[in-house]
Each structure stands twice: as structure tokens, then as C-alpha cells.
Length: 498
Image 1 (spheres, rainbow, N blue to C red):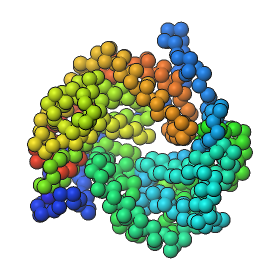
Image 2: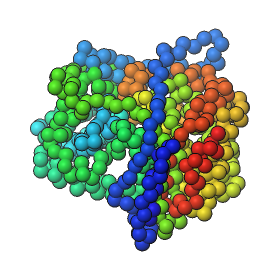
Image 3: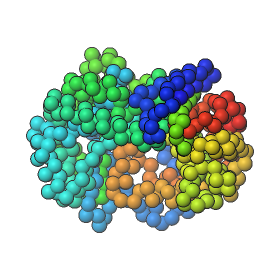
Image 4: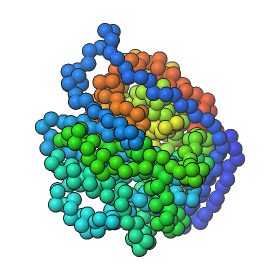
């Protein structure tokens, strides 16, 4: 196995290992090295108001339910969307904190807390918590991302009050029993091994580490093994005390739910949230959000016995509030996705070229937005002997994006993008997720009608400008694992992408 770490504009560092590693083996440690660049942040524009020149909106958008939002004096926000006729509801707590908000010392704390939340509180044992949820026919879940932590419950509308009681209990009254903390270390380590068996998860973690080396976005969500083994109850409690504050939290609900009732429940169960940190906590580096600097570079992990290569190639994308956010959504749709088993994607020139040459098993385009930066790129699974041909095809297609996108291409992409967005809002859980995320991201909810208007305003010039901004003469980040001996050099890829 060979690991090559390459910095954008910097030197290479080569690590050689024995070639006798099993086909599916993965390294137990990771190496990263890269340089620095910058990113831009643009404030979200004000709400779009339709004019007589705009195309008429479909009646199902105009008749869509509205999102009711209430801000408490503490800074806590409550937002909900009632769906007439729905007997079920989803309610949850969205917290503006994830692995990005951690330090190198406590990286993994947010995810560790996600595990500990279900291990019992000062009012409920783990068994009682499980029985209570089961007796409601409900579902309780949580997840941690790089910028957000989320706890939510799906229940009957008549049980929303019980769900809110449970959510508040596991968030604010978790016992964090030292014995339970110790037992959970092994569970998280097993989860880490399972994640590392999935090449896509592994590659995208490597991609973030090399793209944002030196900043919080480069850290993994699970944290390093050393932290999992050393994080203490006090570390977890400190993370709660410094990040679970009223202004950083949104309570969202959707489905068979009443907004006034949800506000009353929020006041009852979350009314005692702290509103700010004390002076000592404000001085602590544990609460600092560092700038997400895209630095470029790549990491290559070569397994000589692997028949496939897994490659993620990315450029600095846009923040949620960037002027390029919506043009890049269209660009992502234009580049498209390809799976050999599903046949050709006739709307994407790249995917047509890949299919005609049988250059890859699959390609997926991703457009990941964060507060102040983003990643725009492709993830590909390739037979090792076709890696070079696939990269030549990808760079050629990316280079022509800044010039060859037509108005017809953009109109087709608009239809596909709007359909994808509407399908993503099917069900009260998806709507609740959208409400919570948008309030943390934008400070308000952009309705589907407003989003459609923003999409309709875009032209081919806007998409070409976004492509030029992302690809033209820009450093990239790349992570590659497997049979990658045919992968071109960093300089070759950079020089052929524009």
C-alpha cells in the first residue's frame, strides 16, 4: 500500500507500506498535508416578491401551508408547519453546533453525546425511555453533522407533548454516567470501523481533511480514536454547557401539530435554557468557530490488490448564502449522476461520455454548503485500468462548463432541480428537517414558492459564471483510495480543468 499526500502548490510526501494488505483492508491512521487559500461569504438576499414579469407559480405552491415562526426573548426559535389531515407529526431540536465547533482535543464530543442521550436521564432509565417510545408507536432518532446536531421524534399528533418532554429530558438531563461513557467507547469504535469499511465515507472524510486542513471542517464527525478513548463525562458536560444555548437552538415541527401548543410546550420544557456564556466560557477556545479555509491538495491511498478506485475530486463551492448557491445547484444538476446499472443519463454530457466509453461504474455530483464555504465536486467508482481515461473525461467536461452551457440546458436543469426539491419535501419528517435546517442556516424559512422564483431568475450566464468561479484556474482537493496507480498528477488535473 502507498499513501501519497500532495499539497496544492507544495511538495509531496510519500509513505510506503507493505503490499500484502488484504483486498478490503483500510489503514488505521490517516495522513494529511496542504496549504492555504480563502473563501467568501455573502449575506442571504431578502425575500423574493413575485412581479408581473415572473412566470406564474403552480397553484399547489401558492396553496402550500405557511411556516409559523416565534422567537422567544431568550433567542430560542420555534417554527412549525401544520399539515391538515395529517395524523402524525415530527418534532425536533436543531442545534447550531457540530464537529466543526469542536477543538482538536474534544473532537468527537457532539457525536459521543448523540450516543449518550439515549442511555438514560435523571428521570428515565434507558429501559423506560425505550418502552415509552415503543408504547407511543413513535420513533426517536438523532444525527450529528459538521455544523448541526439534531434530535427528533416521529409520533402521533396527539403525542407531541410526550415527545417534547422526552426530547427535553434527553438533551438537558442526560445522566452521562461514567460507566455508560466507558461502555459507549467500544460502540463508537465499532461504528468507526464500520464507517471505514465504506469507501465513500472514508474517501469523503479524507477529502474534507485535505480540503480544510487546519480548520474545524477538516475534522471528522466521529473524532480520532484517541479522543474516543479519552473523552470524559466532564468533557461532554462542558460541550453541552457551551453549545446548548437558547439562541443556538430551533424547535421545529411539521404534520399534525398546532403552533400555539408547540410554543407552550417549548416554553414549558426549554424555557430554562441558558441564553449566553459566562466570561470564562467566552474566553475558552472551545466555543470559537474558526474560518473554513479551503486549502487544496490531495491524499492518495494506493492498495495494490484493489480492482477498483474510489476518487473524490472537489473545488471550493459556495456557502449557503453565497450568490453562487443556486447557480451551483443547477450546475450540479447539469453535470448529473451516472450508474452503469441504470443506463445512460441523456441530459448530462459528462455522463453520456462516461457511458459511451464505459469509463466508470458510477459517478455522483455533490454540492455541499457550509456557513462560509463549500465543496463542489464528483465522487467516482472506477475500474483501475480506466482511472486515467475517466479523469481526462471529467476535466474536459468541467473545463467546457464555463463556455458551453446553453439556455436549453439550464431550462431542463431547472425542471429537474425543482422536481428533486419537491420530492425531498414529501412527508412531515422531511418538512420538519427543512424548517430546522433553514432557520439555522438563513434565520428564516424559504418557501418552495420563493425557491422556485430564485431558480427561475437564473440564466445560462449565471451558471457559466458560477462554473468559471469554481473551476477556472483554481486549486482543487482530491482524495483517492484503491487501485489508483493510473491517477494523473495534481498538476495535470489542475491544468486540464480550465
